[in-house]
Image (cartoon, rainbow, N blue to C red; front, side, top):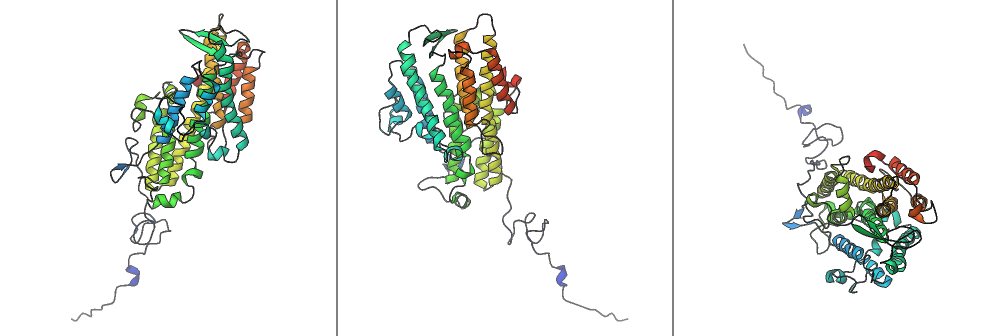
Length: 420
């Protein structure tokens, strides 16, 4: 019996299916679904955050936020100077609007710096690049608070405060120095600066795509084009600058949550909110988002970067609302006592005033707008001060309760959570 053997060339249809890069199936030499191989764009690898905020290139750290550390230190010195009754308005305002090599500070390195606080107050790209009017009004507020401290409070440093009379008033073992209407100008300056500078620069400037993706930043970051003379890309540096306003003065900035409260600004009040059981974990949430966002930049994953920026904006903005409600509620409870401790009440409300002021620099999720507009903030501050001719001396528990309720209603936390 004979067998007929037929041979033919391999059917073309048996060749491996070519990579399509668009059919939702891994085929050809794709290394993932529609990615990788010789024809498709590279597959994105899962981005993992490092254990600490540590990023290197060729063995050198790429993290730099010296400018933010400088401004934090300037702020600390101004707060001390605002409690020195021998200071003049000229010297205090010179500290705020420091010019390079002027002998404004105790720290000679700060004197040598070309940085200052005024130029970064209400200066974010998102909120103030096209809003010079409000920027000027806000900066004038800070200068006005300095002037009132010098004109009203310093001359009455050793005078007992009373309605319509500036001076000193006891707050437990502390002494507070207030204006004629019960406000501590140093506290207004301090807490309002948290919003107008530290928060605004973080959430509305350095974490903004308008800054991170400005010019050719994305292309240069993708191609590892470094800033001239530096070990980092511009995008990496902008992200670090946001981080610096939150964690720049911690003993170990790469692992900062071990010593929250390292400055008098955002870091301090992140620590205070973290210490409230209702909000425990917020510090790690913000820190982890900063780490993952920075790692996403290194990986070129800008969607993940922006997700982390949104989370940071949300949580830092909430801190302003939480602390505003807290101080209003604490003052309300004290004011309802048979013998109100006005020194403590005025201190709480001066801090609360600053956090209310800071609400105009917060950022609503998914919007290019704050939780409260400047007009709304101004109206709340007027309500706080206008229950009588003597400002905080005349404020009522009902006013404080309504303000706290109105603020909490805009956020995702309750009055009870923030107020205790």
